[in-house]
Image (cartoon, rainbow, N blue to C red):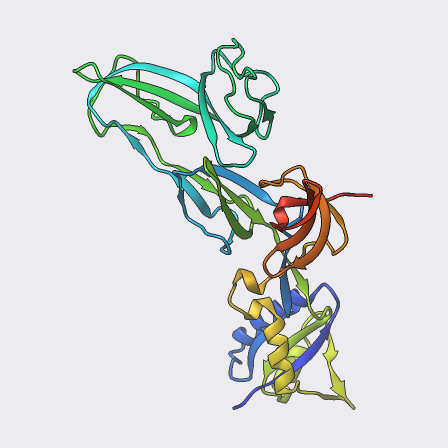
Length: 353
C-alpha cells in the first residue's frame, strides 16, 4: 500500500501538538499501515553572535568529550580533568587553599601561571578577562608581579598539596578545589596511588552546537544556542494512504482545521515538492553543523571592532561574509595601509552608530 503526502492546516503555534496527537491516535488504533510519518518542517538556527552563547575555559590538559560541530544537550559532559593520585609514598607536609591565575599575552602565544595563597589574596579588581601590564602587582602583599602584558584567562580555586618522601624529595600537586579528597590531612602518611582528587567533569548548561578553540594555556568551549523555526507555520505534513478511516482520524484531531484541498478533495503533495520540503527541514536530516543555518547579523559595509586574536582592538569595514564558514573578511588599517583579514565571527563585534 503506497502512501502519499498530504498537508493538514492547523492553528499557528499548535503544529507540534497536532503532530503528537495524530501519532498517538495512529498508534492507539494500530493504523500504521494507513498513516506513516507526521512532520512539522523546521530549520534549526544557531546564532553565533547571540547573547546566550555559553563559554567554558578548561585546562589544555583536560580531556574533551566534544569537538567542534557536535550537538549537545543540557547535562552532557563536555570536558574532564582526570583523577590525581600520589606519585611517591611519603608524608603530607602542606595543604593550602590557593588561587591559580593564568595570564595570556595579547597575541595568545605566551602565558604565565601564578599560584597565590588564598590567605595572601590577589589584588582587588583582578578577575577573569582583566587586562594586566608587565610589572603590575598581582598579590595583595605586592610580592608577585605580572611578567607579561596580557589578560587573565583562568582564575580558579585550587588546593596545593606538598608530600615529602623518605629521601626528602618533595612532590607538589595543585588539584581542583571542588574535587579535592577531604580525607587527606597534614602529617598523614600516604602511599603511592592514594587518591588526592576525584576527576572533575564539566557539563553543558544548555542545548546547542559546540565550537572548540585551542590556545596555549587553555581550551575555550563555546555552546551556541540552537532555536527551531517553522518553515510553514500553520501546516503539518502527513504521510498517509487516504481512506475514509484515516481521513476521519486526522480531520477530527483537536486543532486541525482541514486538509489542503481542491473542491473538497485533499491534494497529495507532488513527490518532487515533498522531497524538497523534507530536505529543507532540519528534523529530517542528520545533525551536522554545516546543515544548520548560521545567523550572523553582520553585513558587508558595516563597521566592526575586533575583540579577539592578534588584531584585537582594531576596527575595520566588513568586505565579505561567509555564513557557512562563520567567517568575515574585514579591512583594517595597519601601518597606514588597508589590509584584509579573515576572522571568525566570534572575534568581532558590530559598532553601533
